[in-house]
Length: 149
Image: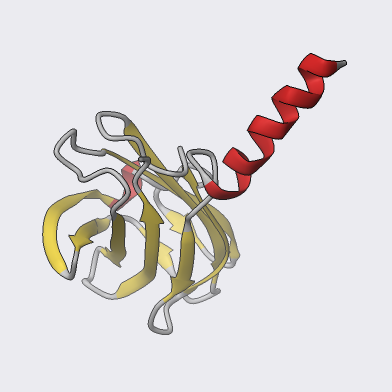
């Protein structure tokens, strides 16, 4: 019993204030053709040298048909862009094969490495957007998260 009490005594403050405290925050930016309902990041906080995965779920509006396009993610440290990632939209939509037609719920997942050079304890801002095959932006999310100490 003493072990469990000691374990909880040490673990609970860590969960609230330390390495295990969640730091991920998100908001949808710009009116887009997808209304975001949920976004997550794993691991949270980010760990230098490990892959970070963002997952976002939302409802596609009736007037969108995605047959291609490009997503872009830009990571900022202290307001300075430090990394840019991009790729084909159809590779990140995990709940709907392209062509993907609204209205429907759709989930996108983007993964990228957290550099070993990322300062521990830093707060990163990452903005991710996606445009369809005609160049119309249909997705925009602004996130912030902490890097593990």
